[in-house]
Length: 282
Length: 319
Picture 1 (spheres, one colour):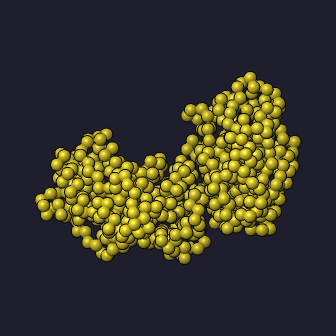
Picture 2 (cartoon, chains in turn brown, green; picture 1 turned 90 degrees about the vertical axis):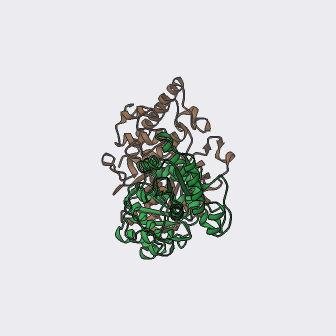
Picture 3 (spheres, rainbow over the protein chains, first blue to last red; picture 1 turned 135 degrees about the horizontal axis):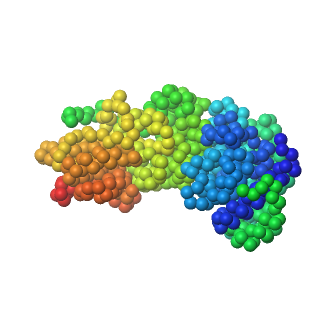
C-alpha cells in the first residue's frame, strides 16, 4: 500500500493535471474534480484491487469504479492515466475532436477504465448496483465503488437506486458522495436543500460514514470501516466525504464559480504555482 | 413464391409469447437474468421468476433504476431482460436508456408490453403510440415488433442471442396466432407473406394479420396486394422495401403507432431517398388514445383491414 505522503504527492499532480486539462480545453469542470481528487487518489492508488494494464469491460476479478457525476471527468481521466490505464500523455487530448477523452466519460471512444457513460446525472448508482449484483451472481468477492456529487442527490433515480441496493442487501457496493455543498447555481442548501444526507441514507437502509474528504488517513480509514461494516451487516455503505469545491487552488475554493469554468492561461499559472509538480506534467 | 396459407390456430397474446420465449432462453442460458417493475404477471415473466428465482429481480415501481441496474448487470456478461409496460419502459426512462444502454452499448433487452392502443381500457396514459419512434432514434438500438405469439416467442430468443441493446415491443390482447411455431427469427429480415404486383402493404405487429385480411379482400376485387411483415423496424430491411415498392409502385404502411416516428415515416424516408413511390399511412394521426376494448379502439382509430383496403386503393390511384 502506498503511504500517506506518496498519496498526497500523487493528489498534487492530479490537481495539476486537472488545471492543465481544463485550461488547454478552455472548458470542463475543475471545481468538483478538485474536491474529489483526494478521494479518487485514495481509491485508485490504494483502496481498489484492480489491474489497469489488463483492464476489461466485464470487470471480472477486479474492483470496479463508476463515476456517476460524469462532469468530474478531469479527475477521473487523470487518476486512470496516472494509475496505468492509458498513457499519461493522452491527457492532452481532453475534449479534443476525434480523441478518446470525451467531455464526459463514455464507452464508445474505447477509453480503458470507463465501464459506462455518465454525464446525465443520477444514473451511476443504479449501474453500480447492477454490477454489484453481477459480482454476487458470479460469486466474486470484489467491490463496486461509485462516486456521486451531493447536488446529484437531487435526482430521484438516486433514491430509487438507494432503496434497490438496500433491498437487495448489496454489501459489496460502496458509494461515495463528494459532499462539497456546491452546485452550478449556488450552494446546495440555497438551490434545493437536500437536507440531512446522513439521516436520509440511513433511513433508506444504508450504513453511513462521514469522513474528511481531504485527509488521506481519514479517507483510507473510511474505506476500511465501510468494508468492516459490510462484512458484519448485509447493507450497502455510503461514505459522505466532506470536501471543498476547488480544493487546492485558493481562488477556486468554497465557491460554485469554478464548477464548470476553465481559467484563462494567466490565471491557471497562479493555480499551478500552488500545486507541486510531483510526478512530472504530461 | 409459393402461396402461403394463414390459419389462425387460436387467439393468443403476444406478451405470453414473450414469457414463453424468456423461459426457453432462461433454461438454456444461465446468463439470462430478468427484472420487472411490479408487473411480473402482466408481462408473463412469472414462469421465469419461478424457475430461476436467483436470476429474477423485482425492480419495484422504479423504472429508471431498473434500466441502470440492467446496464450494470450486462457488464459482467449477464443478458438482462428488463420489463414494464411500453409507456414506462420508454418515455419514462428515455434518458436512462439513452445514456446507460444505447450510448454505452450495453447488452440490455427492454421488454415492453401493452404497447399501442390495444392496451385498451386503461386509456391514454398507458397507451404509448410513440415508442417505436423514440427507440429507433437511438444509435445501437435494435427495434423489434413481432406480430403474434409464435413470432414474439422466437423474437425473444433471437433478442437474447443478439449482442447489443434491443427494444422488444409486444401487446396485451389475444390476437390471431398464425406464424409457424418452429420459425427461425432473423433480426432485420423482412418476411414476404403474400406476393403481389399492384400495391405493397408493409405491416408490423398486430397490423400484420389485418394486412393479410385486407389482401384477401383486395384479391376478391382483382387487386394483387403484396404483404410484407416488417418485424424488425431497426435495422430496417431496406432492400426488401425498395424491391417491393419498385415492383408495385404503391405503398401502404400499417402499424399500431403514431404516424410521427413510426414505420410509415421510416419507409417513406427510404423511398424518398432512393426511388419515391406514393405512401399511405394506416396509423394514428397526432392524437392520444382513450379507454375502450381493443377491438373497438382498433376500429375507431382506423387500424383494421377495412382501412388498409381503402388506403391500398388510394395509394394505387396516386401511381
